[in-house]
Length: 266
Ligand SMILES: NC(=O)c1ccc[n+]([C@@H]2O[C@H](COP(=O)([O-])OP(=O)(O)OC[C@H]3O[C@@H](n4cnc5c(N)ncnc54)[C@H](OP(=O)(O)O)[C@@H]3O)[C@@H](O)[C@H]2O)c1
Image 1 (cartoon, rainbow, N blue to C red):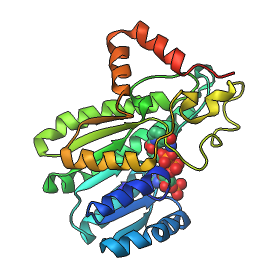
Image 2 (tube, rainbow, N blue to C red):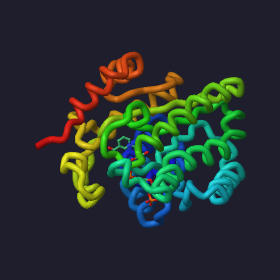
Image 3 (cartoon, helix red, strand yellow):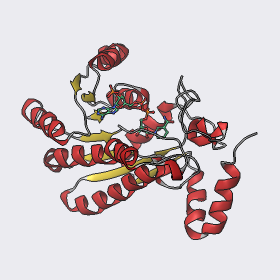
């Protein structure tokens, strides 16, 4: 099951899991987007002989999630992997962040993963399966001008670790993937009008952090790796784990590095 598998990173994760030998259920809100994803996946499905089922639903709505998983239990009777990929990013200054916006971000980035994981748990216990949550570098560090994104992705990181520790005794593994900016056709345009008087660079991918966008296929491969090797936590690109570790051990140096590598460009 891949939530948000009808676009962006999600569709690459679906492709990688199909190649790895899984039948997939994709959840998204727009039927049209799901159908277009189905068309994009057609060749790989023919080649692999795997199945993809498209399900319209909103994963931030708990009743809807429970219905989808009950249907899946009835129809397929088995779930090995849940990838919680649905999430939205944000731009803005902390002083402009509103309660309703924070709730939207928590709904999309955290509650969606919580509801789906809870609903999937009985099937995952039976299969000794895996949950993969898609976090971000913003699950690991704060950065300027990202609105409520770091807040929501840090909450997802905390939830993921707690799930991993508690569900270990059920044989269910829970992983967090933390990608930096991902290459996409609309990179740099998504936040063009966002966030009032922010520096222009803050509207760029990763809020203007000095990082090259990585191919989504690389992130999708990390998901497959987390499933196969039961990796707990993957940061992409990998060398940034050092920056995160420095920031935790030496916060003053961590802040200095973050300010330097995310500084507004002229
Ligand atoms: N893009 C990046 O550079 C980047 C970097 C690091 C981490 N990430 C993380 O990677 C994940 C995917 O990001 P993306 O940029 O690839 O996303 P995206 O292109 O915006 O695609 C989001 C997908 O989720 C679906 N979706 C959104 N809300 C939903 C809901 N409530 N219920 C069901 N489906 C929903 C969308 O379809 P519908 O709209 O039809 O529902 C779409 O299929 C997110 O968690 C994001 O935080 C992204």
